Image (cartoon, rainbow, N blue to C red):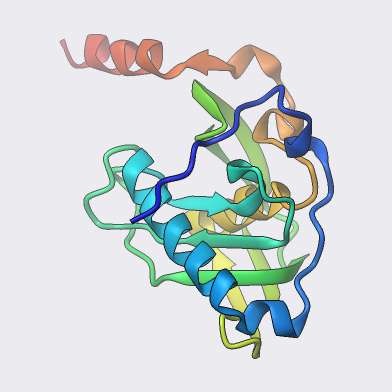
Length: 180
């Protein structure tokens, strides 16, 4: 089980456009090991998605899985596992939805980001087969957030109002105070 260090905001690699994989690279044992180590890393850090640039690899690969018992996003629905190479994302609905987003590369901070409610993702899977998936609601936000990493973007770049940027523990404290 290989756990990678998550690189953080400020590392210039997070601002680069990642390089697509060739079909041969996707099929390689090295890439299979990379995917497994990304799952291990994501689980270790409690994430619901991870992009290769977040572990210092400037390649177009992201993984997504929302577990039912995820502590960072307890109200989200469980999802299947996605291994995504060389994605293209297309908005299918002009309706925007706002969610508090956080990021393993921006630890401890959250901010409200408005993104399209419904998107189509065309990508290659781990067998280098063409796939297409339509994501809606929170899962659409997760896909857009993770795939942004492949194009040098962080969630803070998408924030319309920087005043919503907050430390996660302060947001939790505010919610607890409301319950009193």
